Image 1: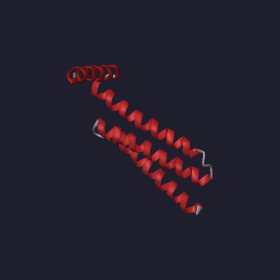
Image 2: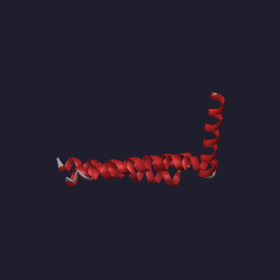
Image 3: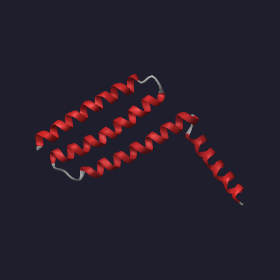
Image 4: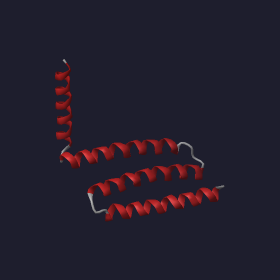
Length: 105
């Protein structure tokens, strides 16, 4: 059983290496962001497989936390490159909410 989990870990590590190659070779920004997000997802999977391999179940919490950080970081990166500033994005969201509130009355 450990041999099968070890093979899965090697397969995930190879997939992570492919995503790193795509990250550096991506022709557009969105290809690179997608590769970074995929690399983060594969890192979570690798952490889970590693936790199963060494028998430490508390590493599952670390993997879940890393998945949450990966998701938030991807959204922040996309917003930053769209507006060139996170403050502008937040200000536009506040303005949009304020305008929507006025139209509802």
